[in-house]
Length: 193
Image 1 (tube, rainbow, N blue to C red):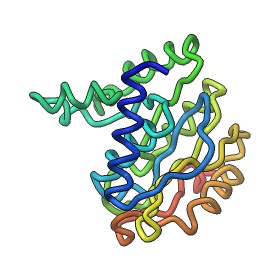
Image 2: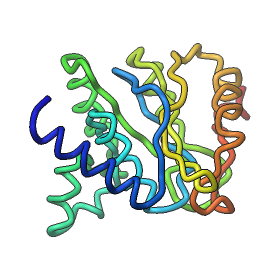
Image 3: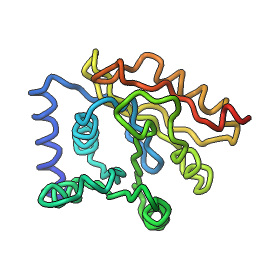
Image 4: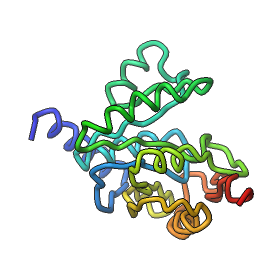
C-alpha cells in the first residue's frame, strides 16, 4: 500500500473514532455513488473520511464556488471536482472518459442537490448510470446512529419507479445530521411516467 494511502487511512480512522462515527458496508469498485441524506456540509467531510478509510478515491462533484482561493487547493487534493452548474455536461463527459480506463472509478453526487428540503432529487445520477452502464451505489450518512457507509450497488433497469422504490427502501431508515432537511428520494421523471 502506498505511504499516502496509509497516512490517509490512519487519519480517517483516528478522526472518525474521535468524532464517535463508524463506517460500514462493502466498498464498490466502480459506479455512480449517490450520497444521501444530504443535510449538512459535514456530509462531505464524512464521505471523504469514509473513502479514505476504505482506500478509495471518490470524485465528488461540488459546486464551483467552493474552489476559490486556498480552499480550492484543498478541495482538489481530496478528489473534489468543480461543477459548473450552468454547463455540467462538459465536466461529466471528462469524468466519464476517466471511467473507461480507471479500474476503481467512483463518481459521487448529492442527488438532493442542496442541503435544504426540496420536492425532488436531481436525476443526473440515474441518467449517467443509464448512459454509461455504471451501476449505482447508495452511500449514506445517518446522524442518529453516527454511521457513514456504503449501501447496495445495483444497475438501473430503466423502470424509474421500480429503481427508485429500491432507493426509497434503503434510505427509509437513514436520517441525516439535520433530519428535518432531508428530501424523500423521488425524481420528477416518476411523475411523468
